[in-house]
Length: 409
Image (cartoon, rainbow, N blue to C red; front, side, top):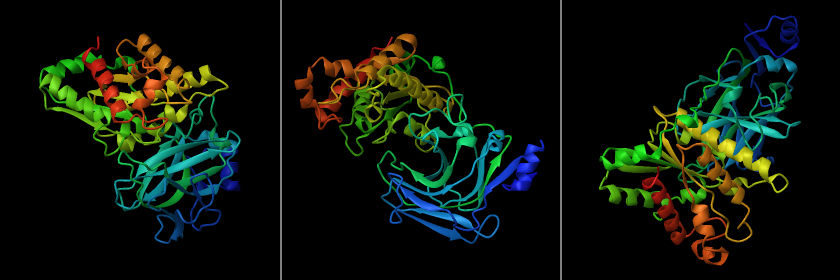
């Protein structure tokens, strides 16, 4: 049974005859759809909205072109949610991709909560097909709670829906053009979230990976983080150096490091693009460091730190769920900034140490303590700017992570 969002559909729901689907946008025309780019301002130069007359349903479909070089480009429309929306489990819509390996996104927003949530989907299929996303498949765009959670916005609080691309850096820092057509947006039920989590308590200890390297077996290490880890194209980046150091230490050329870190990323953005950047990688060990792009709130350092480490664990558990078996894990204690942020990130480093105390199967590479021991003046010589280590700094990070791996207990 299916209803268009109109009086008859609402009346049926109120009468207790709940349909399994309810249409909220037909996309038959472009009425109400507006271009949105970085900063949430209208900017036709970076995104083009067109009417695709080869629709999956009805007279037309929304065609979104996010131009190359743009980071955040959407076609957006206001919607009128009602309490009826809370009876549904998520959204479904038809998509026609551009045949590329890129991903598109759907964003829903709550004006009242001043928050938004992102769901992603591949664009490889150039034929019309259906995408179904439960509320639990959406990830917060910032530090806000999960959608439809106890502390978060409910579907009835939503006032805007948008399609396009969001933070489309990839590990190579490319910002490609994406083209997609979207049609027939509906609320659906029943629907279960496809995102899963594997408890961090089940992660194997790092010495198990060390034993595999010593035995000459294939070992894959996945490096996660922001631009401090990524450094695209720079062979001095610490993950590359760790690979060389481990191969030499164990005389094992079958040790591979995959760097999936993205400049500008956060724990939430990493979750958003996890299916694009991590799915398909079977890692034996994960290294991870975040923090600079999501610094503690000066008005609530303890509370914001607790939420940050919770997001980190959520991300790690979702990454593990994409693999056949959970990986071992080394978390880097967030390094300080060079000048004004010399102390800002100390709470995050302390939270990482505390996590490792509580979870004995998790190892810590305390790059923060290593750099702090130098003192602020000497540390500056290892930094290229306020946030990023230079080649000397990257080499120091590699040494600390290497020791954390080979000496893990």
